[in-house]
Image (cartoon, rainbow, N blue to C red; front, top):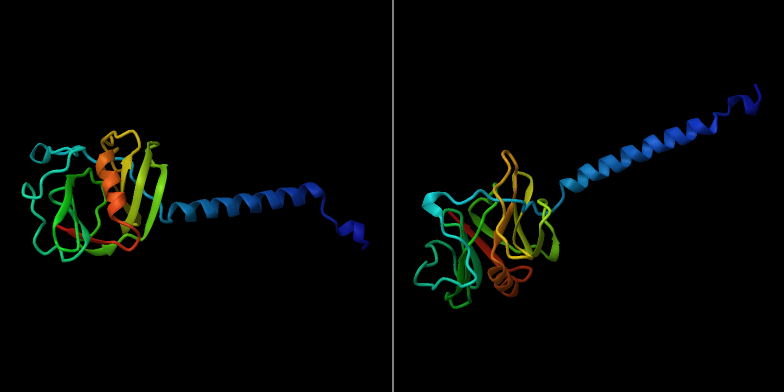
Length: 190
């Protein structure tokens, strides 16, 4: 048998290489989707019992005391039940507190730290967000604080959509961004 008889037509090679490339791109896309990306699309609208909305004006510390058992020292405290964040300085004084819109996936109560910060990106709901601060994971999602660039609140979560973003007003997002650099302690309480 001659060498020419064993050659495959170029169309077979091109087809094989194209299919291989598509498979690699698909595998990388799936892997990237599982990586540390915020899922800050939406949060359920507050119920009637929790109808407080984020405000550009911070609440006074006396209106909402820092929860017991939230640690000590300079930290960000996030209460799942109150849907509220406190910025606490090294002396234990509250510098700012505000209500947030949590995603459908919450972090477990415990101690965390800000691991990554991103100035701006697009949320998975297509909304431009900024001041993105990743600090935990839950149900395979990255959990991060952020605010919409235009200051809007997130729409209600689509049924069954898992989201890990914790949104706040633009002013509160700016304050949190200035307060919490990489490594800042974050305490999550019930």
